[in-house]
Image (cartoon, rainbow, N blue to C red):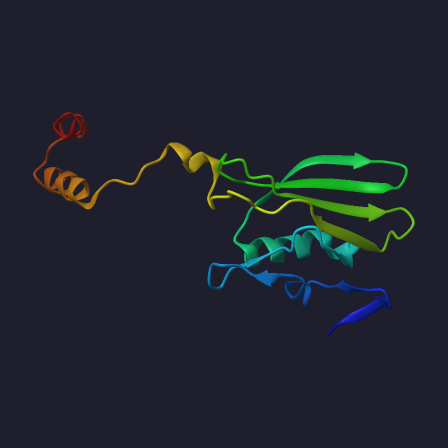
Length: 151
């Protein structure tokens, strides 16, 4: 159900906002097109952002909010591992068109690594180490003894 507001551009709804996305290099995961604006109805922008986040496998974090003379601007950044990812999603509701909201992916996710920034210090244990821990737990050793045996 595509709804037309103006002949110049389409305004998406929560039902069809996925059509503004493109396939990424990861099967089943979509992405926003850098430097290409699209519009949603302003009363649905948060729901549309949720759909976009789910389809793109990202978690957008509100970083800034400004109320200027031209409108209300939200700046969203992806919750990302710090790898120089410059991806910024700008969401703007203009005073001149308060019923529509502009989404604009300012930069692409160059060098973006999916996952939360909290994951940076976490390393996956090798299967052999996991088996050793499991064996020692089954034998009744306490956590301190197991940790010392793995060093």
